[in-house]
Image 1 (tube, rainbow, N blue to C red):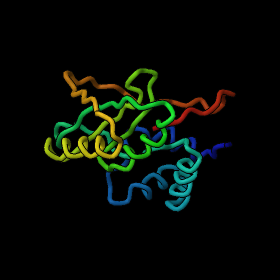
Image 2: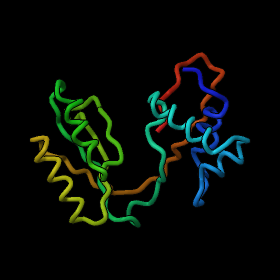
Image 3: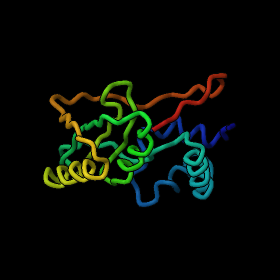
Image 4: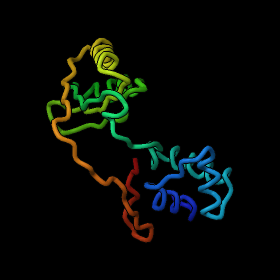
Length: 160
């Protein structure tokens, strides 16, 4: 997929500092010399092309409720099926496959510890697999923004 200049700008310039206004896409459009409709269409195309998987805030989970990293030991042939079950929970921020006995890892965030435990229990019920809960022991700040070199001939990486 060839990305438009607008799509490239959205990827590189708005991984941080996203406008916190009642009309953030209109604000982006104004700053990029575009229209809100064009910005929304560009983002939708990026999502449909599986280049953009998530657009949302990153926040201190302890101030928002309860969360944990969790993992499942999934038979390889069932990985996509189980991942789809996990993805159905709105409390799951993301999940990813790993090369490990526990090969499906995911983050769950909920309003409180009780709700968090209910979600984990429900995932166990639906998958028939025991969830390994990996609570955070120490917080680290990781800058997860990436500057993409669109002039490079390398394939475009997925941006989350």
